[in-house]
Length: 184
Image (cartoon, rainbow, N blue to C red; front, side, top):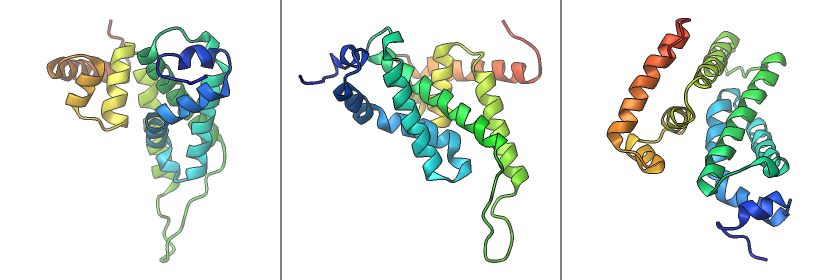
């Protein structure tokens, strides 16, 4: 049995390890980018690797719940990665934080700075959860994966102008959400 782009979802739903290996090989890049961008402030490769493993394990264990095609699967696994990273951030925020001290005895980054960075990321992700799925995907690609608007447009099947408009309107909505109002 050969796992391909056309049949990997069917085999993954049947809990075939070959399909999981295909998913890992195919999606490791984007999953790693999402998790790295969310957890890089912790400066711990082990935490990132653990979260990547949790993402693929979560996809494998919940594959039967997935409905859709290859493009939907990409969005689905990216969403799993994003939420696994958020969960990891929450767990790490409850744990004591140790930071590195350089040769002069100064902290590389103060605990307050680390907290502000982590809090800002968590707050942004929570606010983004109130946006439409397409807008969340566009924001993730733009601001977490550092993709250019042209790449995002090609990936989403939209024009560059449509991406620019969605980013502009999305920023306005996020600003409104941040200020405590709701925008319908």
